[in-house]
Structures are given as structure tokens and as C-alpha cells.
Amino acid sequence: MSGFEDPLQAIVELKKQIDEMFNNILASFPRTFEVAGFYEPPYDLEEAENEFIIRVDLPGFSRDEIKVKVSEDSVEIKAEKSEEWKSEERNRKYVVKQRIYESYHRVIKLPEKIDTDPSKIKAILDNGVLELRLPKAGYRREVELTIE
Image (cartoon, rainbow, N blue to C red; front, side, top):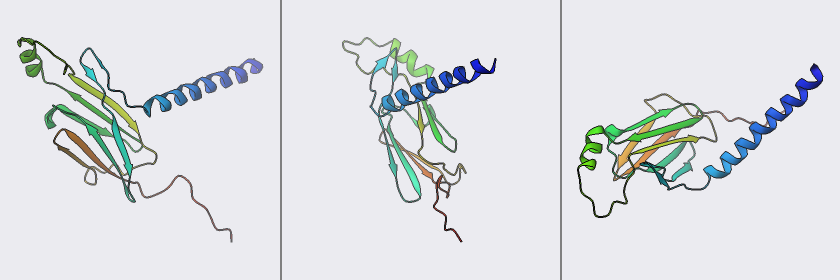
């Protein structure tokens, strides 16, 4: 049976790598499509000396409608319009309605681990732009050692 396990494991691993490759390629292109009220605007990820800065356009969302979860290697951003807002929208008589998004969801993978201490992370919403300042964890994944 061990003859089948190794090739099957290799196929599973290859599929994971191909899926990850396509996800990375697609993630590098901004997707600004709308489907059934869902909107996914592009984001900017900037690396500074001691932190990462993420800026996401979230026009029309208030602070109360945005939720951000941070782990050491990713950021999840969700925004959803309130039921009251949705009800008001249904009662309006539009001649043209192009701004139909009601929710937003995105997971952003970070190139390095960050410090997840909430007192060190800053989240600011200003003029429809969410800015997150995420301090680096203080260590690198790869270091060069001096041999004694």
C-alpha cells in the first residue's frame, strides 16, 4: 500500500501548490466587480521599516459597519450595510442605480509575521479609506549566521 501513498500525497501537494499559485496571481489584480451587492475594491500594502500599512477604499461604510480581524500572518476585513440601510434602499425609486454594494470581505496575506497586540495596531477610517498600521513582529523568517 505504501506504493500508492507517496504518489497520492505528491498529487495532493501539487494541487495545493497550483491552487496557491493561482490565488496569488489573482490576488495581485484589483477586483472591482459587483455581484448581488458584493463589492471587492483593491487595496494597497506598503512596507515601512517597522510596520506594514494597508489602505482599503470602503466608500459609504461607517466605523460600526466594519470589522477587522488580525492574525500574525493575515488580515480579514468585513464590512456590511445595516438592515436599516438595506430597508431604506428598497423603498427608494431609483432611475439609475449603479452603487449597489452592500458588503465587502477580503483576507490579505502578509509577507511577514506581525505583532498582534491590539494596543500596538492602529485602524483609522478617514474619508472612506480604512488605514491599518500593523507593527512587524520583530523577527525575520530568514537570518544569516556567523560561524564561529
